[in-house]
Figure 1 (cartoon, each protein chain N blue to C red):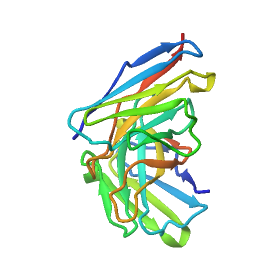
Figure 2 (figure 1 turned 90 degrees about the horizontal axis):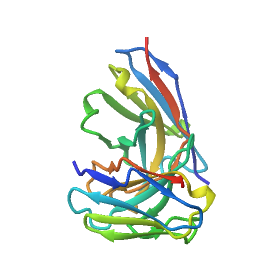
Figure 3 (figure 1 turned 180 degrees about the vertical axis):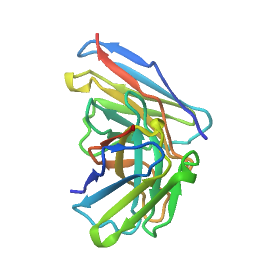
Length: 108
Length: 124
C-alpha cells in the first residue's frame, strides 16, 4: 500500500497570506495525485487532479505542483472560505487508492 | 448535473450487517467508463477508500475490508449499494458514495462528485 503523508497537520495562516501544504508518497505515484478540500459537515470537494490541473470551477488562487513522491498545494491568498481541511489522494495504484491524513488550515 | 445521495440506517448493532444505498441522479449509472465508489470517514479522522464497482459491474475492494464487503448495482433504480458484514465499533463513520472518475477505458482516478454522506454508528 502506498502511504501518503501530509504536512503540517495544522497550518495557521492569516487571511490574504499564502498557504503551502505538502503531500509525500511512500513510493512514486507519477502525477497521479488529487487534492480535495473539506469543510465541516460537508463532503470533500475536488480541487486538483493530475497533480496540477484545477477542477471545474476552482479559482486560480489554488495551484498544485510536484511529481513522483513530493507534491505541494498552494493557496496564493487565503480567503475566509478557504479555511478547511485538505486531503491528497494517490490514484497511481489501482485498486488501492489511498488518502493522506489531512492538513487543517486555520485562521491565525 | 450528476448528483449522488446515500441512504440507509444510521444505527447498526455490533456483528450485524451495515447496508447502504447510493442513488444517482442527473445521469445513468450504466454510462460507459463510469466507476462508482464508497469512501468512509471515522469521526474526526481521515478518508478511507472502501471499494468501487465498474461500468462492467466488476468489483474492487479495499483488502482490509474485502472479506466483509459486497458492492452491487441496481440499474433499474440507478443505484449502487454497499453491504459490510460483522461490523464493530471501528466501522462507525460517515459513509460517502461518489463517482470514481475514469477516462474511457482507463483505470479510475479521482472522486467527483460526492454524496453528502451518512453517519452510521455501530452500537448496541
